[in-house]
Image (cartoon, rainbow, N blue to C red; front, top):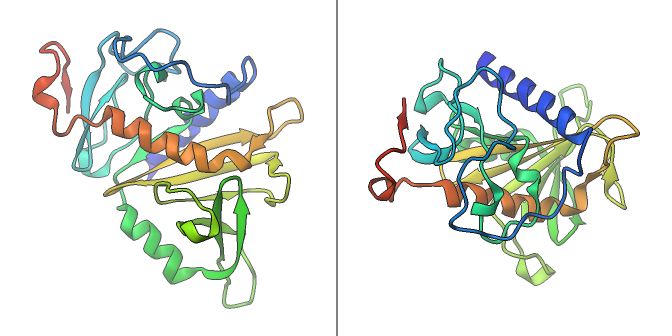
Length: 247
């Protein structure tokens, strides 16, 4: 768990630095399948080896992903927590550059277990439409009656106008109320088959860009597309010979 805490701390520092100089929710560049996988402008963690321009391959859970920077050296594929980013031009259909800052992939716990924990420990207290999707509002209610902050779980129900999105949920440190622009910290948790990811948002100061919670459905889709484009589990043998495999 210490490694996970260090990764989140690093992601928070990177977000602070980036949001001070640019719009973190700017539109993604046009898709270019011939662009370099890794460029100098990416939010690298100081002290960890980088792999420009063609990237490297590492294993997270049962999947092989093409990455731009090594995971923490103490991690193993079954217990890997690492920041995840590469050139957004390589992702088709990406809506925003946001997904390339603050995204963490995690194989410590399966997505199935993560979802089961919400079903087993939280109580459904209502539903809410946020952006283009419907969410169940779940709250952790303790034995003393104390109510924890809500977890919003995506409800795939086409009859209510929801679009098809990857399985995901999110929580925030502040109340999520209309018009769904808030300060504080939020995390979107997105399942990618057997593993899960977190996309971190920070807006603690008045000068920071507010967190656009109404765009969380499209950001969840961005997370899935980003992992899918980097997933080379079935295509590893087709990569250039000089793309290294990282233990």
